[in-house]
Amino acid sequence: MASMAGPDHLFNLRNHFYLGAYQAAINNSEIPNLSQEDIVERDCLVHRAYIALGSYQLVISEIDEAAATPLQAVKLLAMYLASPGNKESTISSLREWLADPTVGNNAIIRLIAGTIFMHEEDYNEALKHTHSGGTMDLHALNVQIFIKMHRSDYAEKQLRVMQQIDEDHTLTQLASAWLNLAVGGSKIQEAYLIFQDFSEKYPMTSLILNGKAVCCMHMGNFEEAETLLLEALNKDAKDPETLANLVVCSLHVGKSSSRYLNQLKLSHPDHVLVKRAASAEDNFERALQSFA
Image (cartoon, rainbow, N blue to C red; front, side):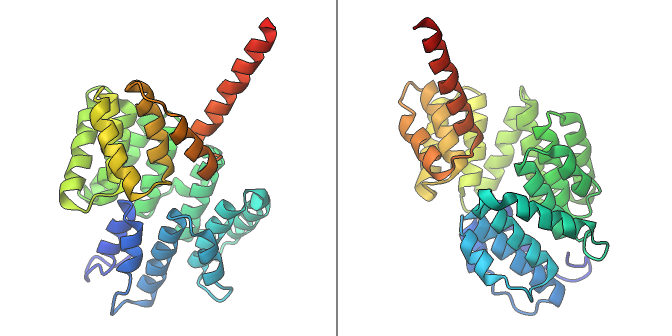
């Protein structure tokens, strides 16, 4: 991370990435006067942005054996996402790095490890590598993991740590919104105001639009949510969260959701909503057969 004394040359680049403006992050990554450490962080952010856009093969081909260790870790994430069939070998390589005392404590390697094990739904293994924190990215990932474990109490402790470091940091604000959504009730309005604040300060992204839309759905404003989600769909027609939220929203406004579900099945067959739909179909088929 950049020292507190000097200017943070990567501030805008990080903000683009955190808020889901991935192409903007890539387009604005040519920054002069970077230290060697900043160059590695910049390159990691750019390649993570390509991964978020689904350009896995580009990342795999661009990062060669001579690249810095953090970049190799980012390449490993691209390999994991690009080839679900080879994920055992990818995870095996990751475990080797984590066991190596010379690189295993690197913040980016721990972040990638947490991300991969969270994908695997092995939350305890993810936390083994992320819980000690050290960067805002790791603290924010801890909040996400604890929310997935339905432990909002632990998520709140992580959020307090982030607030003590930098209350106005984009990731602190995002983590606060995630936690407010998880807690629900009167906290939904607070989450909405955070996303609204983002939408007034920064260019609108699918991430911000989805955040506002989910808040609207929780508050029963499905028409407004649908408008926001259709705007998000215009920005990225394959975004899995937009498609998943449109499936849910369409059901509530009395419209067919099959087109969005089919798009989600084609572009993201491992999405939790696709798996739930398949499980529901199997149960329905079994129920029909029992009556046959």
